[in-house]
Structure formats: C-alpha cells, structure tokens
Length: 445
Image (cartoon, rainbow, N blue to C red; front, side, top):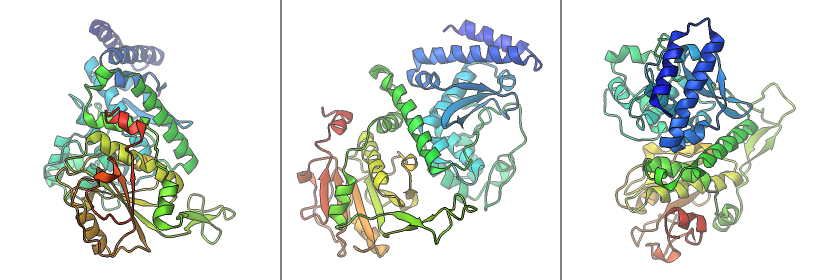
C-alpha cells in the first residue's frame, strides 16, 4: 500500500469537520485499512492480528482508540474525530502496533479485576512501548517512568515488574504532572486532564468478569494469536525480538505433562483445591444466599521454581512455564512461581490462579544453584506436610544438596533424567525429552 495513498486519506480526514461523522468514520476506516495492509506486507504478525479484530467507532471515546471486550471477543474501538489529529501515517502504524502488543502479552486478561488501573495503564504501556520506534503520544515510556520514580528502570521486563516499581516507588516530586495519573496508597487519583494528544485508552480492563467469561475470553484471544502466529513466515518470525517469539510460541503449544499422575506420585494423594461450602458467601455474588462459596479442601502450598540461569534458553523457559497451564487445569488453588539462578529471586515472586496470569519473563541469567531453593524453603519453614516444590530446569547444577529433610520435590527436566546433576535427587524426576512439541520448539527435531 503506497504511502501517497495513506497521506491522501490522512489529509482527507484532516479536512473534514466534527459534524461530518459518517464521512469521518468512512475515511478513518479506509485509512486504518490501508495501514493494516502495509503491516501485512512488511510486519506480518501485526497485520495478521489486526485483520481478525472487528473495528467499532465511537465519537464519545475519550481518546483515539483502545481495545476492549464485546461478547467475550476483542474489538478495536476508535474515535474518528480524535484520530484525525494524527499528523503522520507512521503515527497510526505505531498506535496500531501498540494495541497488538497489549494483546500479545494478554494485558486485558491479566489485569482484569485489578485495582489501580491508572498504574496498570502506565506499567503495560512501558512494557510494550519498548518494542516501538516511537511510542504513541500520551502513553508512558521507560524514560518517563525513570524520571517519575527517580531511578533507572530496567529494560524489557514484564509489565508486572513495572507495576511493582510504580506501586512501591518514592515518587519524584518534580514529576508532578505525571503523578496525577497515578493510583497510590489505596486511593484513586483522578487522571490528568484530557489532552488533544491522548491516543491509547484502556477500556474495561478493570471490569469484574465471572470465571466463565474469563475462560471464554482467554480461549478466544489465544486462538486469535495462535492463528496469527501460524500465518507469519519463518523469515519474518526471525526478525522479531526473542521474547515476543517465546510468548507467541508458548500460546501455540498445549501442555503435555500428566500433572495429575505426577502430583499423586509426589504426594501420595491429589490436593483437591477448593470445594463448595454453604457456610461461606459466594464472593462474586454476595446477595445470592443460595449460592455456595469456596473453601480449601486440602491445603498444600505448591511452589514452582523456574530455572533462569544462563544455560536455559528463552524458548526452554517459555515452554516450561507453558506446562503450568496443565497444572492449573487440575489444581484449583493458588500456585506461587519463583525465578532462580544462583539465588531465588523473591522480589519477582507472583501467584497464579488462572493460565492467563503466567508471566513469560526472564529474571537473572547467572549460574545455577539448586541449593538456593532448599535454603529458601528452609527459611520459610516449609515442610513435607505443607509444601510441594516443583523445579523446572535443564538439570545442570551441583551434585550434592543440603535439603534440611525436605523431600517433597518434583523435578521437571528439559533434558534426559540422567543429566540431572544431583547424584541422589530427592522426590520424583520427570522429563520432557520425549515430548515432540518441545523438541521441535527448541530445534532438536
């Protein structure tokens, strides 16, 4: 699609006034369509995602565009009048790519029902804008966040990391205008005044949804991303950043481990997670006294430790994390996930209760110390009656461990069982070495 045609459409949109709503919508749709066609030719992933998303137009939208849900499907909502303020077709292209990157990391799913949505907006914008040449106007960048909190912000971290930085920071008083966009100390702070250059708006991410809606939305979004990824040629895949590739490939592959059998082997019984109880209110519908609440039937803490050492590749880490979806399918309770290399990165711990909450981020990258896991468990007073430790690793570490009598361990290896460096491993050892999907993903088949 020629740049000249796009510029003609942009100029035509600029020439219209706000009273010509039908013309504004038609020209805006044609302009967006032409940019999507360009992306299909030159940046295939983004074009493939965008051609699957229906577009809806709303002249009352408080910004140029944003992604939201309609009947559990993603849609792209657009204000044609606001869109006419963009000066270049490149600005529109960057804004559309910004929206797609929110979907790649499933931000509308991961941050549903999360408090402090202004903070979520900034954290997710910082995460995705690092993959763009120019960030859309009015969205937060890593450089702006560095100024706001008064210290250097790490590069290419998951949005959850940036959210923690925002919520735990001592804010720079010189950044007073930006501070108006924050939620902090449990209080909702009004957003900054609506400026003409506001572009991306996050619509309805904070709305309460039931588990059935969340499951349906997750399945629909992942199906859309998987379909788009399958249509991207290998040549164009190779031009994308490694963590985008890992994220999309993890969505495409279904879990293969038989978690039910593995946990039974480790514990001798299957934790039943939560069960209905009429002695507790249903928190989602408190006025319905006829509906049961949930209580834990068998309390077992599951702590998952994912190897982020230098010997682990991005694809290996993403694949191992993807296997946790199978665990979530059979264990209806909280699971704590930690990254480790020479230490357990406690500050990056997060809790998952649904598959869309898994963070495909890398933390650390040094050597490997399995001892750090057992030291951490010992400090927490974990024991065999209360905790199951699952270690996802390539198995390359030390040969001897001080376990402090903790043996409730399930080792999941990306290599053969005999490659586990621990000479007398406690617990059970399983491997993905015979998993054809894994072998193809890491290039061994």
